[in-house]
Image (cartoon, rainbow, N blue to C red; front, top):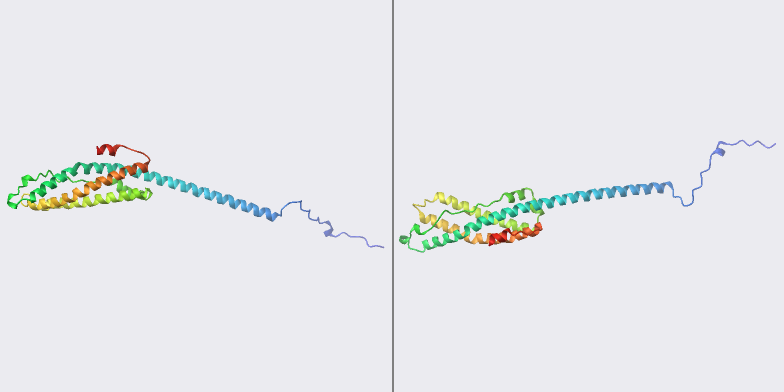
Length: 225
């Protein structure tokens, strides 16, 4: 007799279903999903950095603009101060030179018309704040150079003024008028050279500032008339 068939456990295991036509392996789906996630993360990081950079650039522009407005006002103030005394310095220097052209016995201090030395005390608050906040690095390079130059010139004038102020206390005008007059003549001789240059540089900076600020003002033109 034929032996009866005894089914084995393996006979009940289902064969894997055939893959559908055009279907990709599960591994392919996983790689695609990972790739999309990486792409989305990269785009998010890029947009975040771009937004942060835009905010930082905007902050720098606002800092540069506010600093430049303060500097412009300060320069106008300093220009008016120099303009107010430069003619007096020229006249006083002329009288001092005329005084020294005479013989010592013929000299008279009454011929020298000195109505105070009339120093210029420059405003520098806006400039110091600009340096402290590092706003100068965000201003147009040519304009920043011009600003640095003119404030450097003001510093030289200030140092000469301090030297002359000290000389006033050291020299006794009644007892040693010639010594005082010589010191004043040297001081005014420097001033009549430096002050016109300062005014010229002020007049170059003001329209540059207007262009940088995107506006045009007539304040400086009115002050020149």
